[in-house]
Image (cartoon, rainbow, N blue to C red; front, side, top):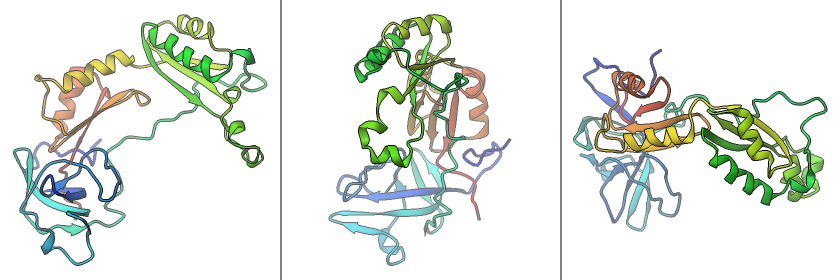
Length: 274
């Protein structure tokens, strides 16, 4: 199935990109990739925009604070090395333009184990504390095949919210989740040695060590293509990578090298939407 965040192999251009553009004291206009620090003025970075001129843009389409200018735009251009050369005037981005299509479905924090009869309950309240939770994390990470540790916390009712934040964040309410590519019983035994609360141990598609190894390889000299952003998403069980121009064939080669779905590749430059 075609993905909007990848470019078909045969498409020669033009290309389009949508995002936050920032020019400040330290650099010229850049299309921000990855996180944006929403300070005043904002801070971020990405590929340089060749041919960009804030003065040529419509009044009110960008903000100016101190020596910084910034705003969200739709850009048409072509890759030139690590930069983007504009081939048409930019236009201010609408809310619809800014909808994120780069990621797959949002991962779920819900425990994958079936709920026990009578609901999730701690086995030993004396060992269901924040200190025990930290100890459980250390134990789990030491077991071969460790994937991820996360908490599934039941929805807090309005009455419980009224009782205060301590009630809402009580470890006695937590369902501690640990995933592993190894033996489930081994992982459960290791965590149960220190944790007395509700526990769900489930199978992971990839261990944390495996995903870290893939991320490091993508960041190394033998990487398939240069990347602008690289993240480890253990909850989704994959590495997310962003390139200036990524094609469908690049994703196929990553699937062949690391396994289908292990790396999710996205492209800053995409097919025009107009």
